Image (cartoon, one colour):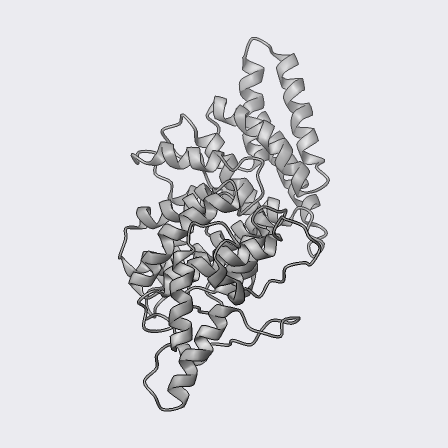
Length: 394
């Protein structure tokens, strides 16, 4: 079993006087060991777990044997509709029953989110990386709570077979939030946990650095998977960073574990997300890598200007390009910069002009960072200089 039960914390959260049943199960198991008996579950826990499994797939509130196990209160207002928290707890309880079935140790493991559990499942090599990715993606793209629970019902037995635990208190909060505005934070936390690089082994730093290089650096245009990978990245255009499951395998952002667990939206993650979607649009249809170190947006725009000047449209085309590049330079913040880049990148794609995506990510990261008040000015000056230097060269 991956968990270490002696380190479990089963204290109820603030505002709760009684632990959730999955927390009580841990206490029950630990009590037997503390009394010098063989660690095992009491008859009450075993009987209740059976009732939970029998309720899997059934509507909340329809199994009388489960009613005493709920901690989410039912309002005494005569309303026929069950509260969202009660429904979410019902599903959490049934998933816990499926997960705990036949496991000799508690499967409720605080601080192990679903993304972390799937990462451990992938590393266990019980399933292929692609198989784990498919299951996590299926859960992450569920349209509603009912569909999500169906996917989780197929996932938790795999965790049980591999001896991987799960934080059911966290899962309860996530199921409660699924059909509300906080779903994106839930998705981001799963994705960040699943892509957590962990601490590299001693002497393995070089391999770890290579594996964590940005996708645009390691991208192989000749790979048979290149088209599918670029399509996955383009699907994130205009969507909130970290919430697109198809993009999770391509993120390399490092982040403290606490921030990953919270699903924090950081500047680093937002900049990488935007750079990935832009690169995917830029790389489309090209058989050579469009990421070239040193090619700033100013350099790329200068190359476009030279080509436009040599074309049939002449001055009209160059004037339009100068205006577009000037608008990009005057972007007030990173969001506006990203918006102008989204209309600029297709021009580079059509012309086959390369771009430095490491530089672009840094610009998106620092453009309006209050800790770097001179960053935008520095980029504007450099890109403007690159533009005029490249445009004037022969």
